[in-house]
Image (cartoon, rainbow, N blue to C red; front, side, top):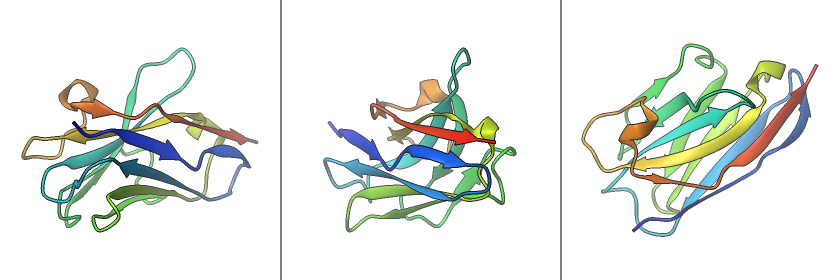
Length: 124
């Protein structure tokens, strides 16, 4: 089964940019749609973005559309989340997830495998 490891989190100022990475332990290009979620303290896990196996289709939460970009490098078995114009409300633990299904999904329960998360903190 695929194992996922996120990296790239940190402490930033509002307006900064950051790129998160999610490295998979197996080839993901033909097998998994991938997603990014986040969880702020005291809140549930929130959908951020998803990308299809090929990378040709993407799907974003309204709160991040236009600021965040999800993309993948299947040769490196890695998925990325480029985050621009960060806001304090983007502060959360960010998780990547893998989905074996056929369509892009935004519900956390529909993803089969999860990473351990990486903390992103944005100060005002």
